[in-house]
Every structure is written in C-alpha cells, then in structure tokens.
Image (cartoon, rainbow, N blue to C red):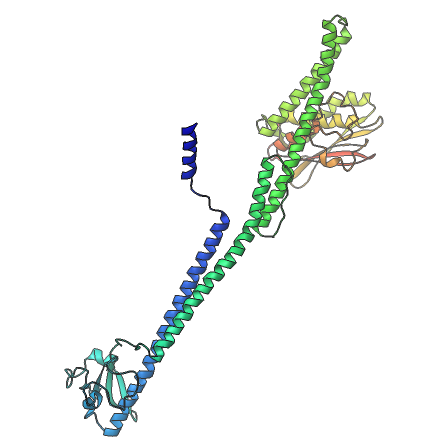
Length: 475
C-alpha cells in the first residue's frame, strides 16, 4: 500500500495545475489591454516629442535667422560677424542673441551670398566656399528679396537643457502618458474580469448540467442568457437534453413492452407444457395448435425486432431497382383481395397514367404495403373501402393507402410510428408485435422516401408515401 500511495501522490504532484477558462480570458483581456495601452502611449509620446522638438527647433531657427538678417541690415555686410557671434570671452554670444537656443548646442556655418564661409564654430572653414551638398542643406538669408547669405545648421547635440521649461513640459507629458497606460491596464483588468465571468457563466451551467445528465438526471435544462453563439449552444443543449430524456423514456417503455409481449406467449407455452409434463392435460390437436400459434407470435416479434435493429444500424440489405408503382399496388391488392372480401371491405387500386418509376426494393415495399393494408383492414368496418392510390407531381411519386374506417385521434398522430405504441392500449394486439408502423417508417426512409399520415376520428386514415422519380425503365 505504501509504494502505491506514494506513486499516486507523485503523479498528482506532477500533474500540471488546471487553469480555468475564466482565468485564461482575464489574462487574455489584460494582455490585450496592456499591449494596446503601451502601444498607444508609445505612439503618443513619440509623436508629442517629435512635434515638440520640431516646434522648438523651428522657433529658435527662425529667431537665429531673424537676428542674422538684422545684423546684415545694420552693418550692410558680414564684416565683424565672427567677433559678434563669439562675444568678448570667445564663448558666450552677445546680448543680441537672447534665445535659449545657443549656437553651442546648435552649431551653424554662415556664408555670404557667393557661398564663401564668413563664420564657423571652430573657425577652420572661414574663407572656404560651401560645397554643393552644403548648399543643398543651406537656408537662404534674404533682405528685401535679395539673397545676402547662407546658413548651414547642424543637427542639435542636446535640444533641451535639464530644468528648462521645455524639459519640464515633456516630463509632465511623459508622466501623464505612463499614468494613462497604467489606468487603461487596470480598466482592462476590471472589464476583462466582468466579461470573462459573464462569458463563462453559461459554460459553467452547461458543465454542471452535463454532469447531472452523466449521473442519470435526464432532461436537465439551462437558462438561455443571450442570443449569440453561447445562447445557441445553450438552446442546442436543452434540445439534446429533452431528446435524450425522451429517448431514455422510450427505451424504458420499449423494454417494458418487449418484456410484456414476450411474457404473454411464454406464459401460455409454460402453462401448457407444465400441464402436459405433470399429466394434468392430455395432448390434443387443439393444444398443439395453441402452442404453435404462441411460438409463431414469439417468432414474429423476434423477426420484427431483428429487422428494426438492422434498419437502425444501416445493415439491412436492399435490392434497389426501378419499379412501376402501379404494379406494386396491384400485387398488394391481389394478396389481400380474399381477406378484404371476407371482411366485406372493398379494396380498390387507383393510379395515374402514365406513372414514372421509383427506385425501391420490391420485397421491402411489399412488406410496407402489407403492414399498411393490414392496419387499414383492422380498423375498417364491413361495408367500408380501402384505396390504393398512385399519383405524381413535378419531381416525385406518391403512394397512398387510404380508408374510411375508425380514424386516429389527433393526440395519437405524432406517436403513431413509435415502437410498441398503440392508440388504444385496451385493444388486443391480435397477434401483432406493435412494431408494424415503426418497421414501415424505417423501410421507407432506408429506400430514400418519406411517409406521412392524415386522419380524423370517424372519417378514416390516409398514409402517404413519397419517393423521388426514377429516370430508368421499370424492371
């Protein structure tokens, strides 16, 4: 016991922990929220920083150009510009350059109208002529519409000084962006949790209902909370649960009916055989006839059950061929003509001319028509009529077995094809298994057809069989 328990505990410890779909949805919503917040915050920060830098650069560049043009306007030339820009200490600009944008952070080269350099930060390019590439990057200085010089501004080494107004503004924007991203992530977590619990609520109910059905509590229904895919799933589950409950009840009823129908002839056979073996009853032709009839009843019931089981499994052999519908009805009429005359019932065949053939198994269709005609004879009073009709429309052929007998009540019609179902439970089965109409329906559907019934009490019943037309010639 010790090693076995230790092994189970080890397997349990090695088993990965189950993570619910609610947790997965919450994490997914949180991940999407954080990712979206970070992406939006990054884009806003980059665009804000770029636009702000461009604003500062444009503002200070315009200020520099304006001051240079003002210097040229005052002096009439660029003479003395180098000392004016370097100032008395050689580093600080003179008072005329009061912008926070200083030339130490934004170096530039100044050339006259002919492109000869008049000022450079290191002084080494003074007197040289600007190259074509430098002229393409240069900004023209104009006075009264005439070019007076060129300015080539280098990229900034450090745009903002620590502690400046601009730097404090960007720091505030950056803090607001970070706070917005954090707030959006928290909101995504809250909304994701609400959505996850709402979405999985129906799933939890479906799981609990499925567990109840697994325990034998059939017919369990769940509340349909929405009209989306989860709502459709709940509706499908409820329908499945109802159908399962009906199928279980039908199976139980069918089992009880089979046991009852088997018990009746077996009880008779057992009683007679015990009486014969004990010498309480002498063998006679009548006794043997009764025993033979009961064994035939058992044989019919077993054959019908076997036929239905083969039909349900799709293993019933069929010899399909094109058949003339009128021939099927006339053969059925011939088989029951004598019995109908004995019961004083008229059996008629009515068929359109011409009729398209149908693709069926002749023997199985004979079994179908025999069941329907027997059923009609059973409930048609003397003096009544049974019609065997064959008609057609654009794409199908209709076979009908109609009578003017007792009819079927409206509440019995939906279950008329159920196995072992009898509209009148008190009526004797008369040697029938109670599977006739169920066999009829299965055989017709196996051959690609459909059957429907219309009836009214006291007015008769009509069974309508529908088959698609067959193009080949009938056999």
